[in-house]
Image (cartoon, rainbow, N blue to C red; front, top):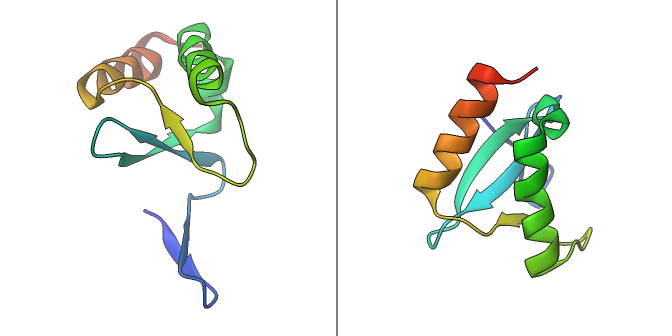
Length: 81
């Protein structure tokens, strides 16, 4: 899914996607940019902003457990747009 680039070993999301980290284990998930148009996903991103703030030098961490995130991801991919 991600790939290593340069000497830093940075794993990047494929074009048109971004990475979020979820749950106590901070599991890595690749999410399509199109999810940002969905109001449910926007609420989850706003909750992250409220809890952690947005710093361009850090990863996006969503304040939910992995099972909740997977349900949101399923909902957005199935019923959105």
